[in-house]
Length: 317
Length: 314
Image (cartoon, rainbow over all chains, first blue to last red):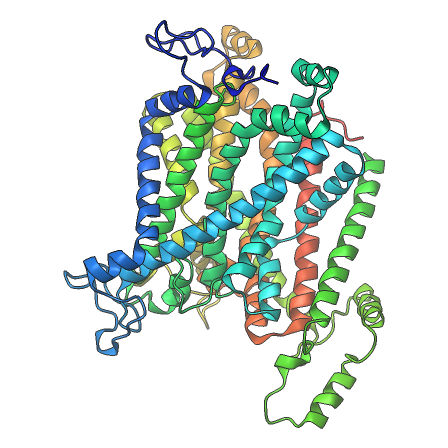
């Protein structure tokens, strides 16, 4: 079934001007193999300098998060859990670049370790959301029927629930852990993805090539995974971006209230738990986690925007 | 329209029922039950038993729920574990404060409309770039953290605004209340402001290219009239739909805003109830919040129809 190879995606509208190369991968460029869909998209993405800078910023945050223990032990020579009570509320200085907190812990070290928690959390939650959202969305969009009806009912239910209050309510009963919180976030956040996937699946289902595949005897699962899924993948990717950003913001809010990731594990949100008590004396403690959150979320938003334009130029219009 | 409203009411009723049943069961069936947290260690086992008996915690769960619902119907949400006061009373004394703050934020957020018009009229010039850049950046900033920063800057260091509360204790007057309202309202308004500015900008750009706008201009109407009477009115329709999510966001976010600004509303009450594990209060608040969210969604759907006569609700 090579009639709809990824390089010949029918949804990618050919662009008239792409410098010296043609945007249509089928035409090729004379010598060498034609650039694939990914290559063409990457070239388009690369032209948007803001997106590229955002990608760099996000990769930097991810790098810091990945190498957090190495960075803090060998470069900063600090430990996120080490308390030195004689060093409480030390303002930013050359010794403590971002100052120290109420227990005399180094703020920069905790910020770096917080990146690990916040980023890992966002990625895990988004993975859960995508898995649920794509499966339910594809099913509801392709088969319709009772799954679709049930899906609409669930959407209605979720629309009426104040999510933050659900989280607080659950936290009253069980002490939240990283995993339980991630599952809750995933269980409540997948509807956006599912709604989008459902709508896209519904529209792609009507295309000729789906009928053609069915005529030559392709099974439902083959049609769904080989024909429909590749065609809506670009939209899923964009939604992944927005999912990550929203999760970082949501985790920060619930952890700030004290019902999210529990101290002493630092996350960007729970580093702000006590900041209200220090507004008069330690502004740096409130400033830095918020800047980290805003920077990361901004990067992710810009990447998602750039991806949307690059993967499917028609979407941006 | 009437049949639509009736259907929505029935739908909302079922939604409320489902949510309350779900969370009631969830709350009562936890290991140890709600009484596990409320008694201090000095109480004997016998006292605990009698307390649980007194609150009807030994009955089968469906009977407990039925009892709860039959009380809720009569406006009785139970009594607080903490101070034994009726939950309804506790909520009702705080609810106006939250509605007052939310309404202020909602109206302040509508300032995004002129901002969007300004950007659209000056397309690809400085005001447009400024508005677009600001919306992108502010969108990534958690609004409650922005509030925290404003609080530190303007209240703690510059001392322009008060640090917390709704009014200065002992000096309750209208100017004083407004002065306390400004920061929380601005912070609550940011989300709506950005959303409206964005929507209005792109809608205006589309409307300004329409034939009837050209007709209005060639009739010699003043640019102001063309912009506000002809173009803007047609661009406002998506804003009507945006109001629902804004209300939902304000109600849902009230717990964070009220924590940051020590605002004595129901969000703050929820926070305190959660810290003290005051289940009846939390359950009652959850019920009220769900009602508020459902109402917000209903308002936005109705506003959509009122704003756009082309839309019919089946």
